[in-house]
Length: 146
View 1 (cartoon, rainbow, N blue to C red):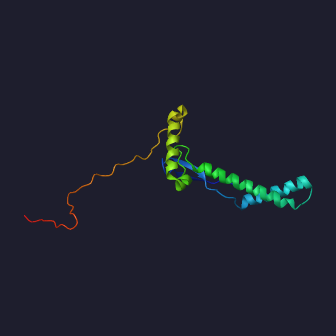
View 2: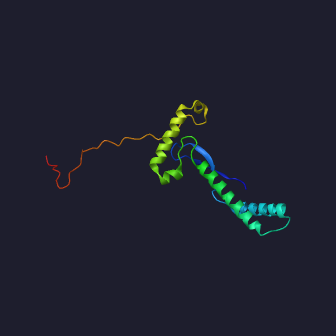
View 3: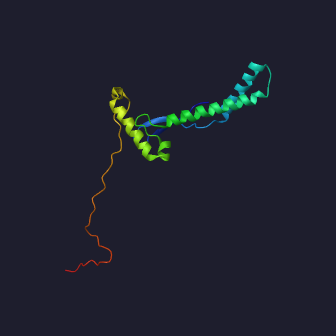
């Protein structure tokens, strides 16, 4: 009924955004489907009919599909293209889609005027250089005598 939105940060670009957490049909939507099925039954057949169950099932399935699609589209980041559901399934494909999204964004002149023009993307960090000072190889004794 009331679409409550929660505030989140993107796991990749760390941009703030609001998304709806409603993923499945709740009691409220089920009630709306029952009422709509009753009204359609009265509209078409002027009394209660067994076909109301069929109409209710179809309305409930359509509502579930719409809610799932809306949630799935809202969860991917509009700024960097990161999709956490796809990331759990295939990390390589996610990286490729992010790269394609950022390339399209770089070529798009309207991206200059967008809300998040500068994305604070994570930079790959080089590992620290190995230090051999003070290490002893296994099996050898350290001679500290003067």
